[in-house]
Image 1 (cartoon, rainbow, N blue to C red):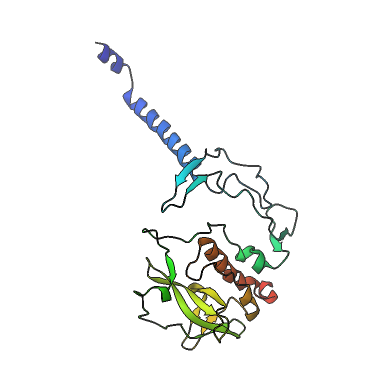
Image 2: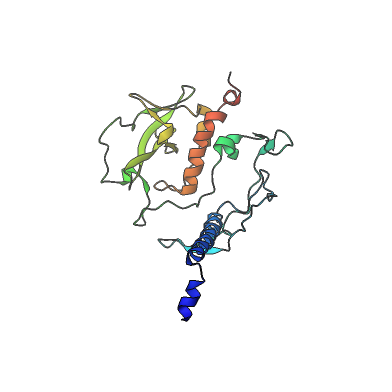
Length: 257
């Protein structure tokens, strides 16, 4: 019989293992190329194309339809080819040498003050509403435990009083406080800045910001809307506070022994 003669001389176990290896190799290729939709093609620290791009090619463009009517996103061509020239200078000619700021690192957004170019739109919850809102705009939310920071003075790392807390911004789905609103004029001028909650130390009589000094307060990035914050604004505000841990004063950037 044809079937008996064919399978009698054909190694089904060998065919199965070879089919598995071919499938597994294709799976690795697919996963690796899909993983290259962000951050590729590779660049050097100076922004030039990297000489070693790896063995896998950059995948073809794929269009993603964003929820809640926010249009489409095409990657990898939708990345940011217009990379800005950073205010940094390499300390030596060798590749991998550290860079030092050439201007005001707090304002230039370099080093620990660097931020990612996220979309300049508010992050939404599953229902298409802004995730982060001021508590004053949320009648269903109320402070229930711990120390209420509202009304307390804000003190920077140099011991100066720079304002007072007037409101809290809440991550509505997570029910967590993300930011504090600080009025930089104790008389209530409306000149406000946001404080990321992880950079605030709430005491019994004050809120302390150790990462910044008084002269850094005016440089804190602001929001376009008083009741909403975009993902890009979140990046810049948090990066500014993070950069202050090293760049708030020249002394902080000096080596410690």
